[in-house]
Amino acid sequence: MTTTSLRTLSLLGLALLVSVAGACVSATQYEMTAAERDSLAVVAAEREAELAQLQASYDSLTNLFEAEIAANELAVKQLVDGVEVEISTDIMFSSGASAANVGDDGQEFAIKLAEYLKGTDFFISVVGHTDSQQPQGGLAQRYPTNWELAAARAANAVRFLQSEGIEPSRMIAVSRGEFQPVATNSTAEGRAQNRRIQVILRRLPE
Image (cartoon, rainbow, N blue to C red; front, side):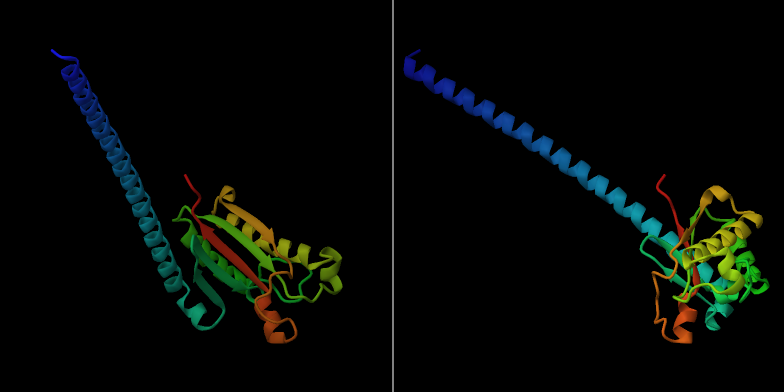
């Protein structure tokens, strides 16, 4: 066989090897792409199921508190990653009391909420908010600023939920004081909107 023939066969063999290697790379890339696609599909399905669960929880809470929502005593909001129940502290706590204890009217709300929460696995953040007016009289002796007052109200709401059978490990009490208003503090109506308790329900990652 001539040198030219040998050179030609060598080139053909090299081309064949390159072709086979290219096919292997393409197959590997396809397998990776398919795996990535399957992974994204799983994530999308899990997110869709999570959103459906949140929608169901929102619907259940709006039905549970239908009368209170209609009377503007309570609001239920659907969040991106949870559900929020917002209650006026004027309803939850006795007005002018020297201690930030849940009042008789507030107990009705809290008992209904606790009964609902017993059947869920939500992590519960209870957030206290006040208006910009500082505590006065006997209230100021126990709570020098709105930080302490909002914290005490959130803590007492958590304690009440615990007394109704909610596991304490599922809850946290947080104070935002006067520093996250939703309305003006220059009017009585605005201040009333700012005095509130948020109960934020979220599912923690497993």
